[in-house]
Image (tube, rainbow, N blue to C red; front, side, top):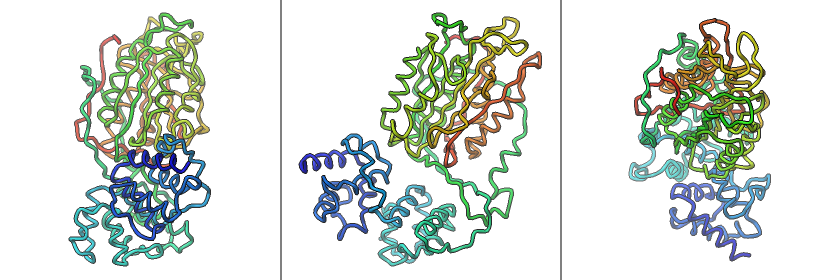
Length: 503
């Protein structure tokens, strides 16, 4: 049994990067009587832990806690070690976990600024040091410890003041008094300036003509930054943090169902859907996602796709995006064969139980689904194509007011029991508005929920020539932080079309 455990530890070491090994060593600083000889070798660390009876086949709790702390739960699966092996008590000190979290949220630029301000430490000791290395040097100089973080707070005040909220929460957690009194209960957004180099697009960009944006002033969205509009917000202690967006952005799955000619239901082909598909592809590639497009999928194939996504290792990805463009009815979508897929079953494929590598990462689903029911005058709510107009009904979708998993956002094209509309030449009102608003407001560092609020405003203002068709989208979410996409370096794509659908 001990030999098998050591083989498992060897596999763990092979799965870790140099930075991750350094992180594990840092987290064990208070546990080990001496530090590992080499930070780039996990075997040294594990050997010391076993030698000091901190780790064994019969007591793997520390290994489980270490891997969960650095967000690598998939490694536990690979070595057949359950995350349930970790008890409610913690072996790693809250102070050490705090410093690790702080290091994960600092950019290279902020690290350089922190080194510049650390005049109490010789420059040669800071050169080539990571953030965790700098924290260790500060400890060696007795500038910080678990009960004294004022020096670090003074540095953060100049470099990245929002991180002081982490320190405040740490003090509250361990029962130490907060250094400054709480002056306001209003949340203050957490703004970061993380940028990521764009990847080259995997598919040739489609030729699109720019279309005119919906009218509407954006002054209201600017107010999401109280530091810009409300001087009193500078005194707020409460901070709403952002999800980290510093690694690979992740996968964007697009399922686009157009051809329902062989459906067992009375469902029409979804004219105009190619415009939506191309717009989503260009926008999410611009945002840094690896886009995968699947056309005309049967119900079972849609389920298999989500199951496959849930089985993949997302540990190096920041997030997941899934887009479904199809017919549907309340609670789900149709495959091109006319069989029904419940949305809640798709969500279960990517929850924390089925996909632990997506734990604490935002999972975003955008669903544009149409239904096949009887026609109701005058808004054509049944999904049957009306030859007298280019506007078709396109959704009656699930009510997700009660979040089924944490860190989930489901962008629905309409509220429950109502339809959404698709222009046969220009795509759906919802998807086109979503793409245009992402292009407009991501460069301004606006968070996704605020952007979807603007989408609600735009789509609710739209109508057809008869002025009888109206639509109201509805985002539902269990997000615990803000989703703020890093600003791409590439110019934004131009989206829109005026040609008929040819998938």
